[in-house]
Length: 66
Image 1 (cartoon, one colour):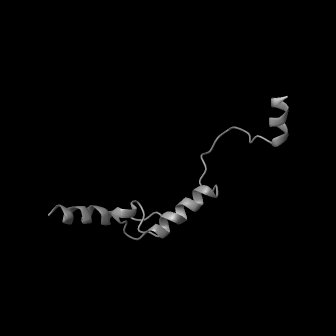
Image 2 (tube, helix red, strand yellow):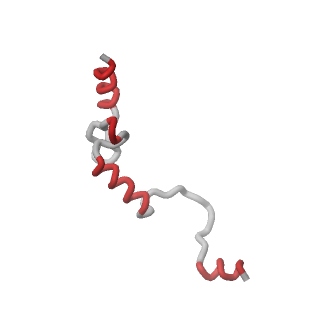
Image 3 (cartoon, rainbow, N blue to C red):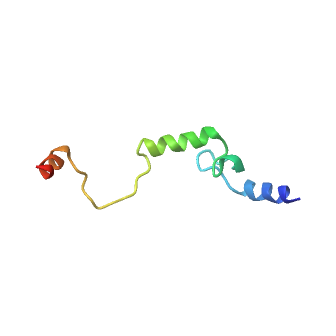
């Protein structure tokens, strides 16, 4: 009985990559494939947190160490 309710709740969620219904095993994704796509985006720097800090250059970090 509880399985029926869980399936309905899971089907309301959509995969953020392909918009198919999400599966509990890969939540919030629909498959390992979409999960891996998202991981690749994180590792590739596509998802960033905005900041007002300026990027550090290798030259400025060497000067601080001296």
